[in-house]
Image 1 (cartoon, helix red, strand yellow):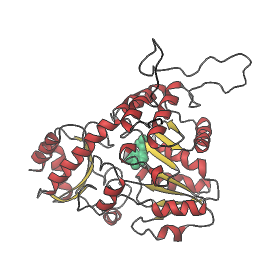
Image 2 (cartoon, helix red, strand yellow; image 1 turned 180 degrees about the vertical axis):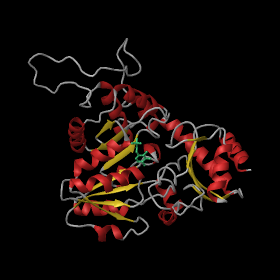
Image 3 (cartoon, protein in one colour; image 1 turned 45 degrees about the vertical axis):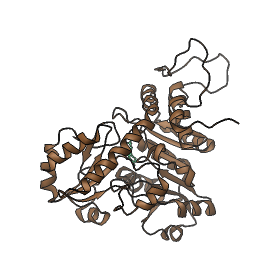
Image 4 (cartoon, helix red, strand yellow; image 1 turned 30 degrees about the vertical axis):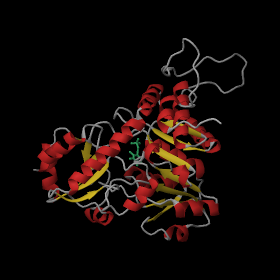
Length: 382
Ligand SMILES: *Cc1c(COP(=O)(O)O)cnc(C)c1O
């Protein structure tokens, strides 16, 4: 019987196979827009907009193995992945049922663009799981969920949506960027399509913007067709960098998980923070669910500082190791204020309703030594 390799092995090797002599150990960079093709051949040509550049193919294969899907496709950003995955399953006149806990960019895509394509979007608060079935219409074709969420790290149980998707023949689409396939694999819980911002944990080094879709071969074929027409392939060099990042994904996630937990536990004992949001803490509303569903709680920690925006500014200016920058999931610890970044489009009241008061900071714990991250936070809060 053939053993199925573990995720660390898959991330390093793809499907392990004996190499022939005198071949490169890593995938070389094919920095070429086009490739020679046989005269008179009617086979598809090789062209880097078609997703068939060897770097694009190699990376996609490796990622599909990690998600446990038949196929995958990398594109030029997480937003490109979200847009193309939705366009692959929705037509004018269709309805999309979305979780209301989603990334700001995704929300804007739905609000500003889908309407003029004739796609109607409505929202369900995952805190009310019974609303999913009640909100399905005759025209509903897909359900979109993000888990864990930004910035509160809420963990959504996919069971009710997966059931509805199966019963009614809908596509269940999940953005699991915050977990990476090391911590959570949506297809194991009934998802049909996985969307990820590879800018975040997959690449992990804050030096590439990229995205990916993982699904059945037929869905990926349709996403690929759309990509060749709308034109958002990943560049070969970026693909090569993400593949290199992927090799250490499992190791990095192990450290992100440890650091997130250490920082959250420490912060909970500090007077400077009125509340700490981390799914690994028993005080988190989804702690039980997260323990059951996730293989790790990740590196994202939400902190509420006592004293509001003025205190936050003083705190952020005193930080030395933890860097004030948007984005997340890189090897270096980053911190940002959702009120000025991901949730800037909302009013103060709307943010409060979502559980993001002024004074809230989102910390992405990197892979530094946890004691050093803690020491930096302590001196800045003191
Ligand atoms: C960052 C992010 C995106 C968008 O990804 P880009 O690579 O910046 O286009 C989508 N979803 C989630 C959850 C994200 O964190």
